[in-house]
Image (cartoon, rainbow, N blue to C red; front, side, top):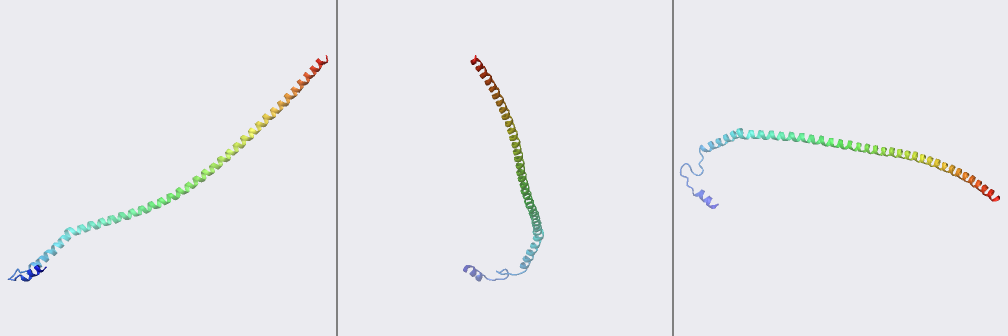
Length: 156
């Protein structure tokens, strides 16, 4: 730092072109800088900024559409879930009702079959009793005739 300040102080100003020579070149450089800045702004930066703005608008538009579609999809999902729940409840009720109906039909058929079997068993039992009674009567008649035959043969 000290070397730089000694360099500035030790510099001798001898005519034009000293250390801080301000002449017509400084305003000319400033004008060139401003002119180049305007030309670059028109040629490069404005189209670039326009493209960036268009892209930003495109992205915002697509994000808006995507959020609308997402909201619609969520609404449809909720609606379908509600419908699915109600259909499941209806199906469960149908299954329960169907089971009750089938159980009642099965009970009815079992009762009918039981009555038929009871009637058949009663008929068979009555027939067996009748045959047994008939057989006992025939047997008794045969025993009586045998007894009378034996008595007749014994009495002779």
